[in-house]
Length: 621
Image 1 (spheres, helix red, strand yellow):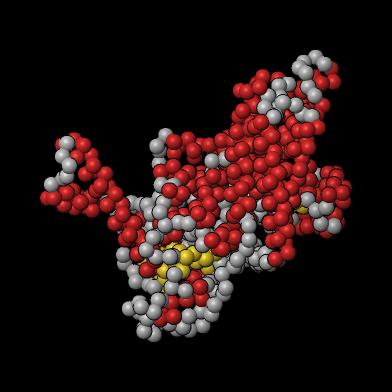
Image 2 (cartoon, rainbow, N blue to C red; image 1 turned 90 degrees about the vertical axis):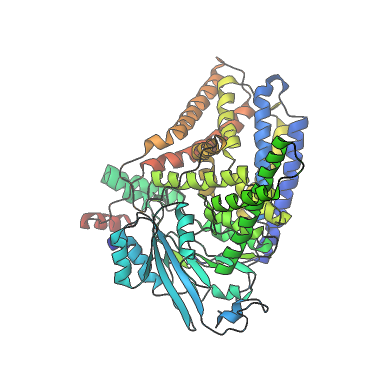
């Protein structure tokens, strides 16, 4: 399988965005202006700009605007400032990583590290590449590194690979808890002071430990998350070359003409918006200042003591809570004030027997769930660190079906936590941490108001009924300053990281997000399927039917409204309303088009013919 990777091996990860105090202050100023204008705009919308003749239409829109504004407040807080954890030299021995009163405070033995590669159905050759890179990990001092393949597929081929490469092999009889259960099983059979968690396709850099272990000099640091980097993201094909390949030589000059006006245009560049730099370099990194960056699984390093200690405390709390609830039910039935002590003791024993001990929560989002447990530990002030530099590389989803499976798990897992074990109501977290977690969970509810934003201009175009009192000068005086400052603040706040594709992707994500929400509301469990590591054959137009409907209805309704305006045949439209809703609709259509195009995207031919290469040289590509 290594043939797939050869064309990507030369790629280097992006450097972290350099910190700039002046840019941060400018962002804080613009963001404050934007939130102030947002409050002013919403106050005006609720008190003066409702269309009382069409409240069925007007109220949902102002509700959606209010929900989106709450998200903006939380996102602004998330991006408020960057405070990277100071880097420290890697520790020599274990005594430099523990508290002074720890039993290991006087031990000068080498640090022991367990590197876990959970696997289920991935090809052995894929895991081989990851193991080869893990075996190149270096450290400036003596260190005990053990590499483990955690095979939930119970495959002889994977056992043979472990034997061949001289690494440890662990499997189990059942698949209870899926990845989280696999990790728990490994924790019970290993003894490393620290654990490096990788996915089967995670290829760690040699520097991963020497660049991150210094953080653990602070005995309260529970885990360090490093940025994930998809090194195989499609780089796209220049427009003249793409037109030449699809339509023939005559079309290439058209592409060159377009590029002279717009600059270089690439087709198929990161079609699924997989680049995670925005998430890690902006969102996660700026949670360090309130100790709220959460674990994202692959590429993270964990202190075993923290994972086990927090898990034991959570286990005890879960048993006590369930015991109290059942005793309450018994007293209600028996009308007794107390429960017999023998009955109470037996009940507790049964609960202990039936309750799973889960160092990594048995959940589709076990990484963020475990982060919540550690951050809310009331006995220990466990800390997390988002390391800014990329320390590993991995594969990206290569087709829309794989992308959909992955995003459905992410969204459904977050919504399930929000609905059933909301960290906002947990003891142990401070308000700032809760706001950071709240930003993540709130964004996964966005399908509710995004659907409203997508349908409102369509309804206006088809009916000429406005959701506001009037599209007049007063409306624009309230709306435009709010929107402009929002765009300026976003541009400055995410300086150095492209954000437009992410925003449009967020809007077009609504069908997957809504399906995840509906699954949780019905009490169904979010499934745990392993994300495919290879491109699935075919195209996936059936997955974007909702986006096609929105795109088609938006285009048809907009044409209908403008035709009606110029002919006077239907409805009573205002020019201001048509202009505003047209811009709104075009933005929606562009968002939908990105997802529709992704469904039909296929990789360009890997090997170009000599004729194609000469043509590209001729076109100056």
